[in-house]
Length: 100
Image (cartoon, rainbow, N blue to C red; front, side, top):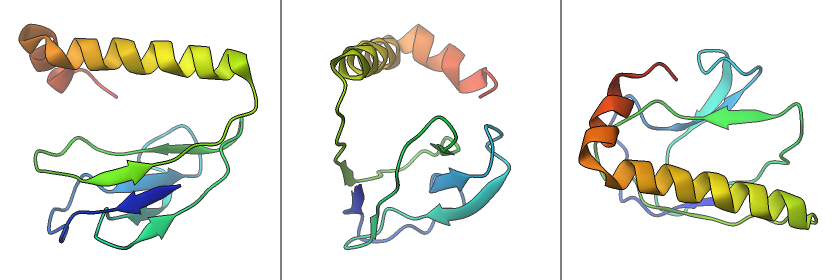
């Protein structure tokens, strides 16, 4: 579940995309993180979501329910690695130019 907290979202990019496939350009719809808007979806092997990079303050709250300890460990490791890479200025700059 994602609950938006941004006062408004005037940007063309940066909305969460609910995808039909693993291709970020093949999306069913986009969800702006605007205040009070909520999106719930079931994550599975065949559900995809993502967003295009956007500079700007995107405020939202994400809640997840999981029933697998292995999933929790894997996602914690992945998010920790991503947060670390974003905190290193050179790596963050390189990531801006890598295809997603």
